[in-house]
Image 1 (spheres, rainbow, N blue to C red):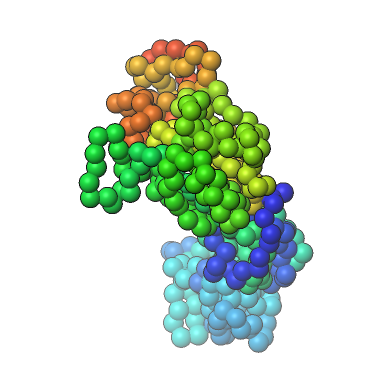
Image 2 (image 1 turned 180 degrees about the vertical axis):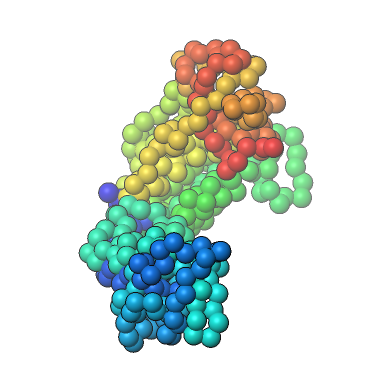
Length: 393
């Protein structure tokens, strides 16, 4: 399971967190047979054959509000008003919905037979002691509601993973800088990576920039390693003389792997600095964001102990549009736009596959996962990963 310590949180603060222990139901839910709708509770045998044209007459003897048991027994030919969630009274074994009856004082005219389907049996949702939520569940709104219905006001969850984002390069300027000169660029990786980390419910400790200075980078990594569960860098991982992230980790840290057979994102690095995991991303902005989405977010989920598959397990089948091309010796995650054609999704490449053009990510609905050396023809079946929550219209 995950490596992060557990914390106890009230349900209202636990959204997006990952359970670190099983949650068992503290009581049956519902605690007794109750009604699934508003109507009258009565005996099934008394309403056989009831229709709108030939209603059955019953005697009204009271009502059962939610939370208050009926003090009495429903006998032959009798009925009580009942409300959603109210306990079934003794003697009654069926419910007629309010839309199918008419009351005149103490007389009820029932226009359809009572139904057992509208009675929720004790423990239908949960039995006392039964597993409500398993360790490793990331808690969404439905999970939190279920935890509450199982009797839990607080839950044990993994602490949010702490992330430090570091963008490297002398050419980078703050996105808010008032002037920009030749060879300089506004730094965009940091804001994008911070947003992705926060979407994954991580706690971003800080985002900073550092130039191509190995001493400054060393100090930056030292600070980050002391504050983070995962350090995410962009730039400095290729083969150039000024790619100091890679050389520093090789000389003074630990490199678990360097270079991945994927496009974009080939120079990606993973290692440790002062014992803290470091994910070294390429500096090209598209590669930086996509590699973090494909590899960094699963790493955060693993730290929390989430029971979730790799994003590569969530592909959709689609048909290739014109112009898709794989990469030599590498898996190509091509940016595509999805459109509907009959019963099929068609995946068309966006305007450019350049790793430096961020606009291509805003144009894309999905990534086409193209095996090495593949050249799909229009109409061929391919696999796509949804990049956005829904395709463009």
